[in-house]
Length: 139
Image 1 (cartoon, one colour):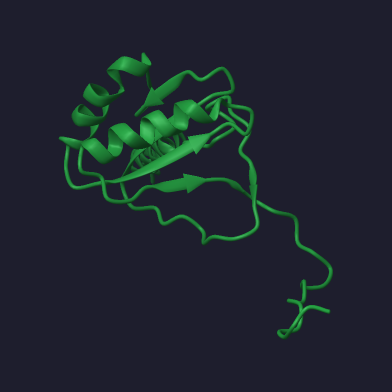
Image 2 (tube, one colour):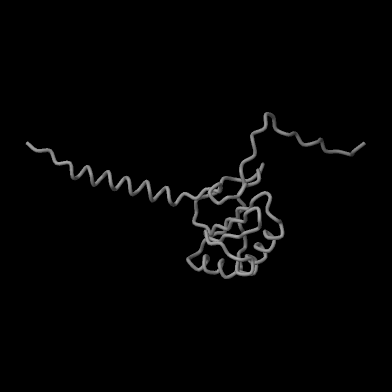
């Protein structure tokens, strides 16, 4: 009686291919080389397909992983949005010049993008919630 191991090897290679492919598709902000600001509000991002725009601390803009000059951001966004109806997710380093973010937001508005998602790190949990001041006249 001979035991055939070939079907098991196929399954192992299939699993290995799946895990490698899944690892390649996972994009994390620390891989982009930016330090995200902490945000106290917001909701966890949905995993819907979105055009990823990253701005690093020196103001370099990457659209869908491709480094582009600030003057060519519009064309890069057009190419990325042409692939289908997708949202826009912007990750900005907390030390990046704010003018670059404003310029990118202006280009997105000119392209008809109605809203965008800003990416940030969750703020550390506080021990007690902050109570709002009581309403009424200030003495």
